[in-house]
Image 1 (cartoon, rainbow, N blue to C red):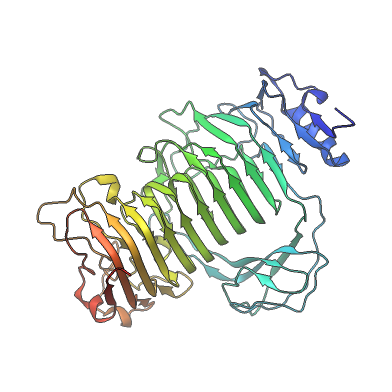
Image 2 (cartoon, helix red, strand yellow):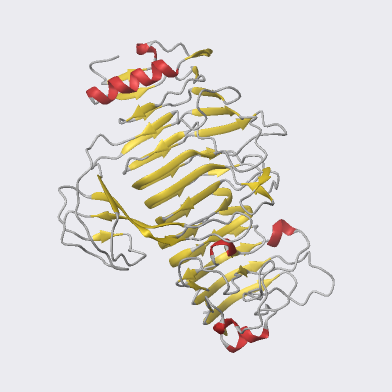
Length: 499
């Protein structure tokens, strides 16, 4: 280590870097020392570090430069497949906060923390996101995450009313960003056999420190066979705020099948990026190959996030499972065959982007197809189903009003399209043009009902207004609203000339 340059290397603590020796223990010792003394860490650029099978986690709390170093992860034989290899953490101690109630969209509290904090709250007495379908479940405890500033102001709109808060956590936000640069990681995929249920693997990098940036990391997956189980994200961001993934390269994971919670076969989601309970999450310039390859699962999943920005990215999909609120912005990006999925509330903006999904935007039916707020489409291009022969449906919304998701569900209230080209040249015989919506109220699965949508147990709030400017199609045919003529009585479609 260098006292003048103030950094340590893995070799200082016994790493060999020959791709054979298990270097994980030495890597753990190097970061432990660096954390204690406030030093940065640099790996050897020409090294190949083998991370071994041991259940060890290197705790990273200082800037780290992995530059062009290689890291090998062999998941064919491990002690603990759920143990992360690295965790990026803050060394600040949690704060103790007393907060008894919160209301939706509350923007300040009387508390005055010593530092800006990332805060999570929960009401265990209330269940939300009660999933429907082949992966059905009983939902999850109502929760929110937000930034609490020193002056008591809240960043990250509160999504729910809390008459009681059964759990609260507050983690101070470091003033200085932590930067992790470079690194080329290769995972030799697991070959786990399990016929029923999911068994997620997490030999990964966990980011739980607010104010962190991962810059230029590359992850490859090799050695997938006919059997295996899914991954919960190689870069896994959880319970923190202000995190940027910049210029990172990801790999799509092979799709495997299992028996889901409804007792029927399902495909298992397997991810290279995940973000859970994150405020202000950004992906800038992130990319992957083969975004139209249907044998690989969509590369990312997020849950309970506030304010997501995807900019200058090329990914197989962008997805929010259990909600995003605030802003959800896709800008100058390309999304592949699994497209763009959305659940939540706030403003959803897609601009200067190209999408290849079955729908331009799919509002997930397993969580009620709910989006409470406006949707803005600007200067985009959509090739439905990657150019396969299909009846295009622009906004996939399906909720028959017969299932309690734990919240009231909404179609986007206002949609504005200002510049969109739809390549619907490969269409079925008898094609009369794309639909903006399917029949959103049609009964799902085995459900049956004769009641009109507004008289069902859990009514689905319809879209009110669609404003269209500069929408062109390869077929030359005008878009239609929906196969359900009743929607035209509720939703106004306004077409304006170019301004």
